[in-house]
Length: 115
Image (tube, rainbow, N blue to C red; front, side, top):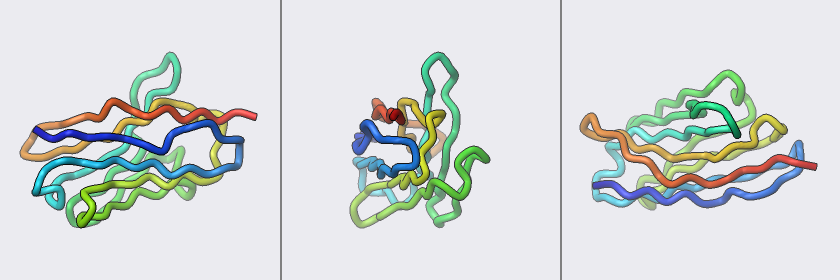
């Protein structure tokens, strides 16, 4: 069982920045593929970014050039640096770990972009 705890969400003005963190349990974190998803109000959950155990990254077109996913295997933590935030980035952001064919999800952290 892998437990994930997200943090770092909050209220930010358009153009601002936030950094989300996701702390994971488990001694083999370095082997997990980690990802951030988000679910805007009234919409379906969507992939934002992912990072493999080898460090390869993938981003949704809507966040390319603005968001950066990274991981610190020594701290069992994955990050999402979000810059140049837009109104449409408002959502609950979820962390996901994929390991041995099983997906684990955190409970999410709310990001609200508003003036």
